[in-house]
Length: 257
Image (cartoon, rainbow, N blue to C red; front, side, top):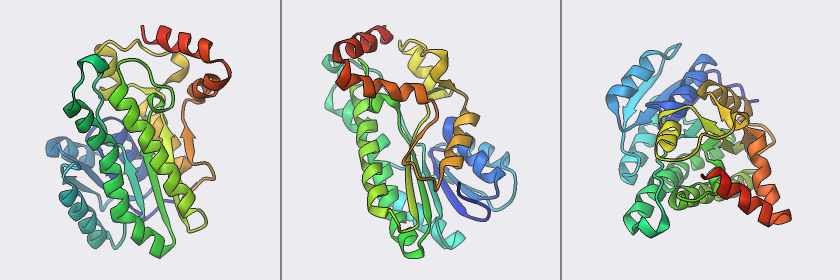
């Protein structure tokens, strides 16, 4: 487990939900947090509740790559480094493939995947040069066990997980650690909106509170495992797929209502 005291942390997507919870957990453990999202008023409210000093609310549209790079360069200038990067920015829109268009896919892939790539490319060289850095990205079980109506979202999360694996393997032994967080279903605005949009409420065994996911995420920074499975039972689904494909398919369709 990494000691984050006095480290400079940037949390992307910090205005609510998991991002806000992780920002709070990092601050509680002594990190200096730059909370980043588009919604300035919500960010100010989050930062006002963070314990400790040196925290910042930074309004930025992360899908604007030049603006995101400038924001991260400013964070390095203010704090001297970016030691921790948490990517919690994401959107989900349930839509059948027959009803989807290219803009639907482009919007979700840009927000969920390309913002993570942009941020990583901006901070990774500095982390590598210093020989220390912690990166964590909020993925989803939809990326490794996709269900109907989640083609764009599942694809974005699967691609994100593949990207993080690559970064983690390339950085092995350098002092830079990259992790993919699989939180299960979380009681956040994003999680609740998916249920309101028709997704069945998942079993209790894979439901998690934001605070629990935040603790597990920060606890896992610097650990040997790339994946941080906050709801381990959910990790069984992709294991079942190659060994019991028909049973797996029936369960996925049944769970999707």
